[in-house]
Length: 107
Ligand code: SF4
Image 1 (cartoon, rainbow, N blue to C red):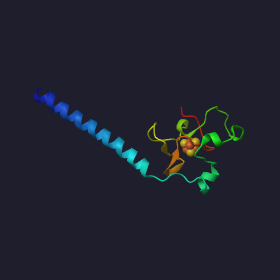
Image 2: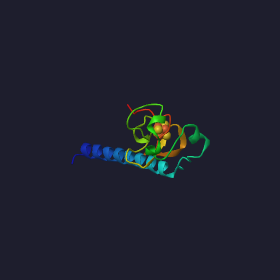
Image 3: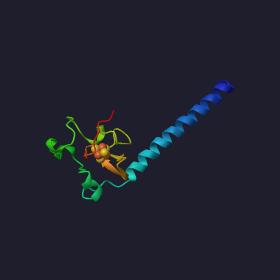
Image 4: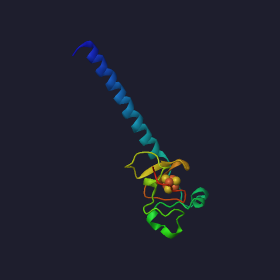
């Protein structure tokens, strides 16, 4: 391996390691956040629940068929995580299977 190829390999390896570290750090932060308390004033105001299937579809402001936090535009974090940050509930996590009245389909 030439010196240039070796240097490029080392630089790419360092960049890949940094990316993996940042991804892992975000995951760790999300796992450390408390779950939204369904009985909290903020959750009550938005009618948040951990289980979207418990919500009567007739009471939802929007009539899209499948509504849950996992397909909402406000969800953050890893797609496969059970609990994820939401921009409407700062410093907490919501259930991917949850729902609230601010739900809007992820574009
Ligand atoms: Fe879930 Fe979206 Fe409501 Fe956040 S805004 S709690 S992701 S439905």
